[in-house]
Amino acid sequence: MKKRILVIILTAVLAAAAAVLGAYVGRRSDNSEENPSPEISVTPEATAEIVLNTETEKPAEEDKKIIVLDPGHGMTSDEMSDEEKANQGWTHTDKGWGEWRHWKTGSRTENCEGYGCSGRAPENGSCWYPIANGDRDGEGDINLRNVMYAKQYLEEMGYEVRLTRDNNSNPSMTKRLESCYPDGGTEPDADAFVCIHSNAGGGSGSAYIEMSGVYDQYGISESYADDGNRLGQCINSAIVKNTSLVEYSGGTIELPELILFCKSPITIAYLEIGFFDNAGDMAILDSEAEAIGRSIAEGIDAYFNG
Ligand SMILES: [Zn+2]
Image (tube, rainbow, N blue to C red; front, side, top):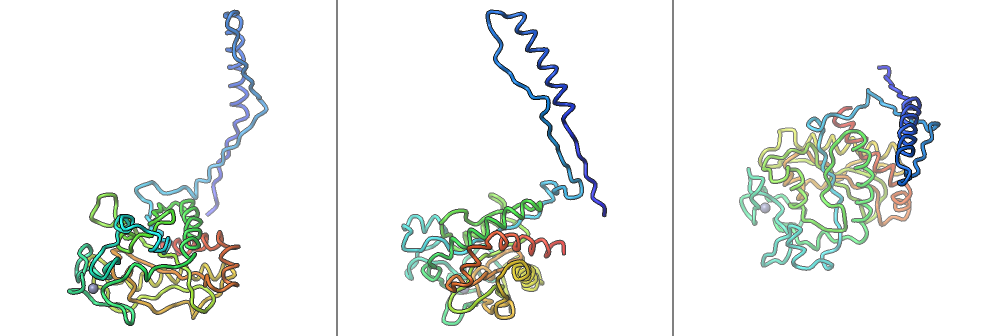
């Protein structure tokens, strides 16, 4: 479709305004000799152009899709006071600080507390997730940088964006998922939850974590895992296409038991963008952060509109 561009040149308007203002100022000077007018300078040559591209108008507020961007990790647990851990949604039990991996089967608000759930956990894991398992040096800042660029591009595309954190805080997964809900609401209103991470431990490139098997939280659709995998694939494909990061491991990582997969009430994707402990990938993460952010936004848009 041909773009309709509306260009309004304001030169004439400004010139007219200057003339009127000039006349007014002149009259004031004439009539108030003892109170000289303030100096008002108007340059009638000043021009302004307003370009309205009517084809790419943003959707009305109520039609906007809501994307939750979740920059993984944050400050390490030893930097957090007990009060801060509690404020960030972590709980304290006889196992220490951490959180429960699951809701009770069929719930999306009631923590499993070790029973009545799917029990899904990575090898050697359990229903309990200790806070220190999430400690990473430096990854939190990389994730946040990528997310801030993605937010900017998504908003330009007309999406509403919520962040699970916008500073160095370290919310629990359960706390992060509260961003799926409107303030004080009990029905999720967000359309997708996108976790942004960077990988470590030997490797290079970008991938999404693939969901498989059964998820049993309340309210998710039959296609929950398929939708999330397609969203993850859309984002990862855009990253590999637009940046110097290669595709890692065929583009997918097997870790389907993640807490966020087991607890999210909406479509979710989980990206591992580059390896931050690989110098080559780290150089790309530093130099191409904006392109990574743009790719995240493009991938999300391709999922909804592609
Ligand atoms: Zn459990």
